[in-house]
Amino acid sequence: MEKYVYRPKRFYITVFGLTWGFWILALILKDTPLMFVFMVLGLFMPAVTAVVTVLTSKNKMLKEDLKRKIVGFYRIKPLTIIKAVVLFFIVVSVSIGISVLSGGDPAQFSFTEDFSFSIAGTSALFTMVLASVIEEVGWRGYGEDAVGSYHTWFKESIIFGAIWGAWHIPLFLIPGTYQHTLTELGAIYVINFFVSTIPVDFLQTWVYVKNNRSMLATAIFHLFLNVMQEKINIAPETKCIETVVMLAAAAIVIVFNKELFFGKEHIGRLLEVQAETDERSKK
Image 1 (cartoon, one colour):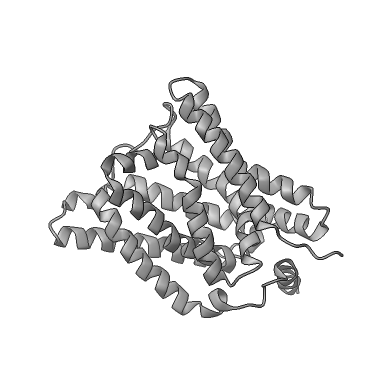
Image 2: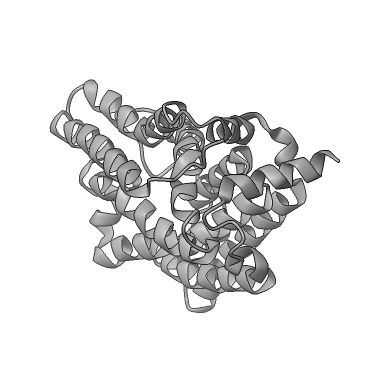
């Protein structure tokens, strides 16, 4: 079987072009019912690009890999997902604790009554569920592997985290989005968003690789992150503290998973290594 060569530049240029194109149209039509349509179309572009890239590749191993990532529930290791969820909960709790000790409002340890954003009147919860599932099809379906096939997972986490943050840029201009609310708060909160995507992706990579590159595992964790960030009554200033705490948490995860983050066995042969792992798991 012919060895597959990932093409990250082509993938990301296509994704950014299509997504940003639809989101710019959403901005132009922000006062019309079409706004939400173009927002959703933009959100779907990483997934559409990933699936089309895989299905048109003529590479059987790549197609089988995508299929296993979507429906291979046997890949999931619940304990790893639970550890990631607990770790993030600790990150949020410690961040709020530091804020309260510094004079912040203790009410941050409570739940919010509603979400902080709404796009074209659509439920924020629906938007987050949709984003958590659809984004993972694109990013874990092809995007993260396209970078990871050339680098250690440590370097990949930094590169992809930066790319993922940049992908959101148009949302800072569109009223009703979470990113737009940050622009209203001030530049420091916008900067914090971009910085935070790096440690978050280290946690996502950990969950992804530990669960045999399972898309479902990262979708579950992604949704938990989104809901936690919205339903905990955390102040904007505390989210800046949270980024620092999350960097520390990511460092701890890296220290305890050095082989995962610094191993090079998968570089240049990601699909082959996964196939070998799957074969061993069947024995």
